[in-house]
Length: 136
Image (tube, rainbow, N blue to C red; front, side):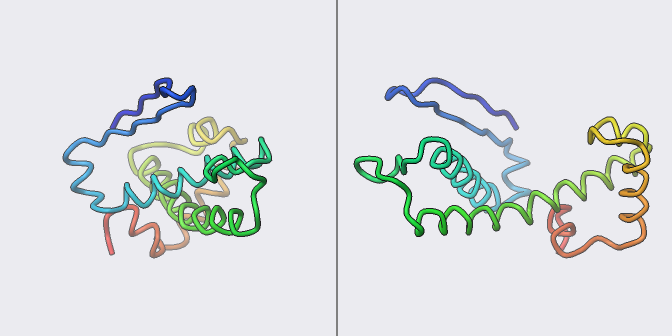
């Protein structure tokens, strides 16, 4: 996977995410759903910072429906991101990682990383974590 950015013709920014064939096959339709949700996150961030909805003609102030749409996508993406993070921590530790290195990666103190790892070891992967790992 690679990501690139370049200036857009209208002065904005184009973001391109490219998946390898193997990644695309392994993820099926998930990349599109996650990209759409991430797009909504950037849209919400833009509305929060500019006070306008640039996706409506005339860039009016955001209305409740705009915020609701952004929140729906935020919720759709957050559960997946949390699951990917948790599954990645398990994979990191299974590959020989330790709590001290985990603390450095997560930018937390070693005690907090040990507590997180202990909590994760004591419970089996949940539905979303299994989803992240390619299981069902």
